[in-house]
Length: 254
Image (cartoon, rainbow, N blue to C red):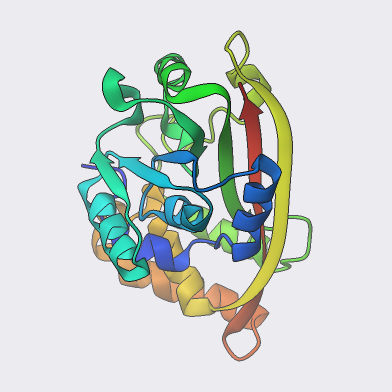
């Protein structure tokens, strides 16, 4: 079973977003222009690739999940963007793919094996260029007072993983990850935003995680949705919650 095969239709809609200001801030910091080429590893539905599209020339997206590739292709068509897509693991990219001015990795680095990934990055990142490890998540500093309740509900419905590393956030320490390589962590870019989200959609967000995907929950999906919605409703205003989210990019330069 593919990790995210049953989350494709939900992922783009329900995860905390990357706001336009985030892409603009990263592009300005890295001085991106139309002469630059970008490759997005673990592209999913193309959120990063298409977000950076106005700031670069050539764009390539890579993902091992066929459904995500299809979603990225559809999103590129809707946006009127030329996006080259490759189905496969980043670690298995062919040697002839060339070098890029920026490699982006979103919610995917924790699934990648360190040594093969570093070997690929050595080939992909042109001298003087950069890697941006990006993410967007709910602010966990108290500005989302509903978050602890939500996380407890989500964890209650995540079946115990057979693989102890499944879903674990590996490679949090990027300095350690890049230790001994040609890259150094140099910049940290953060952009905050907020939006309104319904409690039903917060419940549906649970389905976008690999440990609680529709495939993992099976016939318990509706029970999970009802339970999470009931837990969240008292913390909402007429079924709507304000979410403060934080989009970040940790930049490693070569």
